Image 1 (cartoon, helix red, strand yellow):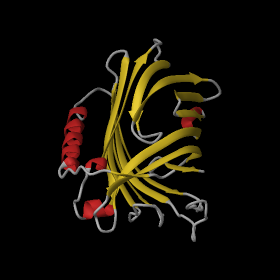
Image 2: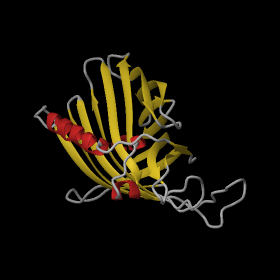
Image 3: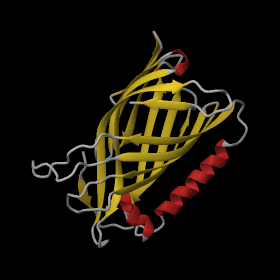
Image 4: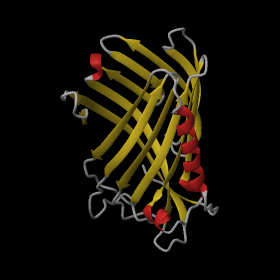
Length: 254
């Protein structure tokens, strides 16, 4: 679901501040911490075209949607860091206020496990291409998400916490319950936003996940500052293709 909202506040250096924060965090996590591993990935997704009705009338042409991205993730004992960029040309030619439909997102996330707690936090610079082209930023360009969990079991298979993000529209806090178990594979639950299963060796996986985010938008005349919200349930079956050791891993899914 997509929804527009108007805001008047503007900010000129939010993107630069976010990038400085990510660089500082990267240097802190890059210090030797025993076990450490990094991973680089490329992403391509394409959705089936669909109608976008306006006032209960089907649109003249189908809406097409693709996602292309690149990312990097670093893992060490008790800490994780990830940075990713993705681009989605979303061909919606209706709605008020209109926007150019080219959505860009540069986001960083980190997670640490201090004692019996797990803290996850992320921040992203997200908006339509004309915002970055003309450097006409407003407050909706910065998105934040955070979650804090308290482990209730010695093996960390059960945790209770709270998280805030845009999964269900505007930023809101939700209680979260995490539980994992090994039974015919690995089961992982993060209720009420995610449930997943993976086979031994992670060759196969099945995930049901609530996704939601926000992009800052500008109309063609750059007079109306607004936001576009994406809210959806995402069900994906994926398979990790076996490749020779020197070749990158390939994951295909539906």
